[in-house]
Length: 350
Length: 82
Image 1 (cartoon, chains in turn brown, purple):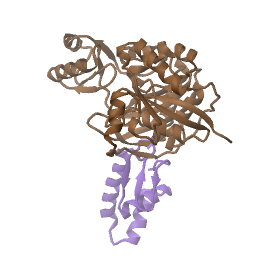
Image 2 (cartoon, chains in turn brown, green):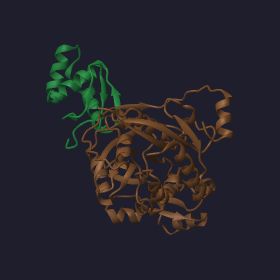
Image 3 (cartoon, each protein chain N blue to C red):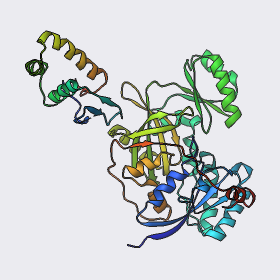
Image 4 (tube, each protein chain N blue to C red):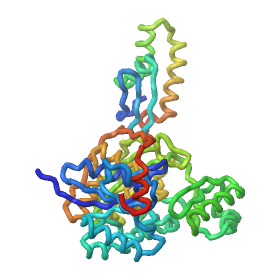
């Protein structure tokens, strides 16, 4: 059977110690038995490793940060599309998903397919909305509140609504366990300076963190789902090693989330399992995570399935995956000529 | 006491619990005991088998056996109804 040729634009090429999902997503697509891919990288920074990894990325274009305005971004995508004829675009940063959801119709008119959650699906799963989300869909969640000043945290503790320890979380990334007012103040300042307001205060649930990578078809069906436990965590809280688990309750939890919310696209569920074996949802990341290649290696090529769904193709659900499959991340010094860096810096293409 | 059915136990004494992702290493006698538990043997039967093979009296062995069984329970390596 001949492979289907496709040009796929992908962001999240920062394959660093706190990696974006771009390269692992590309790895899955590259291993597809049915797609012959040309990968167009969308880079925000000159030193993202992805653009220099030519076995994964065929051509890279710098793109403006979404915060610089939607018009700049769509103009740049239009320029790239004229040269590359993009079939599918996969944004991989939490901070750009919102913009690409907004742009999805425009992109579609240009002939570029995406497979993203709807705006309401994206908005309602925000950390600051977690209690309402839990109530609406009958999902166990820790109590969470958005705060816009440090005084709000002091008030919540004084009123007995939260007790120490509690979690101080950024609206996109970062989470710290604060055990006292002093610690909470430091973390509040750190997180608000980096990610802006609101800062999220979350009840601390004691237990083991477990995660699921999953893909929903937008009609309530789970296309695939693989549970994992981090075995080695970096100072940034990122998994440097992890293992696939045999856990029917996590899969059941995932199927419930998918069928209740009709999630469309990739997602990562961050869960805490307590000593009483209860699962709490602490966060939904609205995209495939950086460890998605573990799912590919365990038998579920979710990136390939996402591309097919974006193209309107039928994708059957997976029913199995390999248990006890391990990933171990490593760092590696790529050597490139200065010319490559210069090209990406000045022309914005490589 | 019933050992979790899902545990993967290698001949070298490596134990993997696929529901938690935890793994453990057993010494040869630990491995032997786990295998006997898997066969459904009772504590008494295990004590009988070990004291027949090794130079140890039943009372001394049982002390170590109950410690070991307690540890398996604490690590949630036994069926949950135990």
